[in-house]
Length: 468
Image 1 (tube, one colour):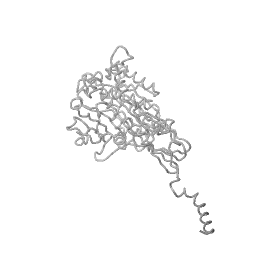
Image 2 (cartoon, rainbow, N blue to C red):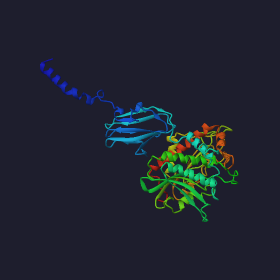
Image 3 (cartoon, one colour):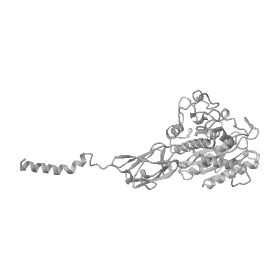
Image 4 (tube, rainbow, N blue to C red):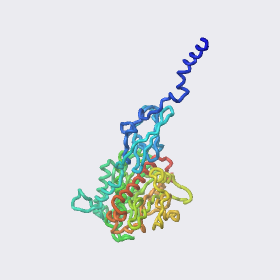
């Protein structure tokens, strides 16, 4: 090779060598998520997420982002992020993750500001969920047990509404104290039609939490009164464990779980009275004028109702081993052929995508009672989850005002013989499902479903009052 050619080759190499990394992939640096992303102040692959619990995270670097799957929820400033993704706009994002108790693996996608991505597999272990069946059982056992030591049992039984019932008054004060102790603005709403304050038509416990937007309101509740002696179809009850101490205790646990969250709209958490006498309690709240009644100058967006909880999937009937039916109905359902309300999308997303419930699980036979519409398609279906016109509880009060509603309900009437009878006790519930642990599992599932529905609906602007 002559000198002139050699000089040309060397010159070319000097020019091309520094550019090699620009055209080839071998020299390109791979993304390292842990340099910008931490969970509980450690690298994400070294963190351990306890299912059902909140965990802190930090994300640094303008333009960096993370995204999660449906069963790993992101919260920023104590508010759920519906997109399940966060990008750094300035310097650092501080947030929280929470998985469901049923999450089996956590894969978080980290995306750097130059478009590269890395999927981080985060180890998980069983945690103590923010609402859980074990705590629910301890609380309902305390409320329904009668003994001389009030530190060990509350004995809040015989909660029949009306006629100045001292048992009911005592229980209402206890529930009010629970909400107040968590920081809620809490009131006893006493309404009479006959002028005698000692004999109210209704006595509700109403806890309020202020939202970001003072033009709208939303709520959740369950009735705390029980079927009075002589009431149909079973002759009334004194404990009312299933109907509806179970839903009452669920509301107590939600109050604790929601205490540190921030919602879009003003939110009420309520324990209604006189549901067994015709929804008088929730109607008194919705249609009266008082400082802590339902405000009539704000848009009522949605309401979720908890009535008769625990005798539902995954609990099985002790007699034949079939799973109890699980009912969750959204509404109003004016046209059975089409989806009428956006909250139905939330209802279905929570059950099928987040909690991954078995959509097509059926029994060999039929259930005794269920939805008003579509029953021919659902009579043997364990998960009866869809829009429906079904009434018979306090959600009807708010549905009549244009709110979108969800009603959760387990077995009733023909599928649970203790309904409205003296045998509606916690001990009987345990016996019917084959043990305390089985009852705790079924309560935990429905509590998570309703809680997630509320959190997601709060961040779904498409959910509007039908009269808006």
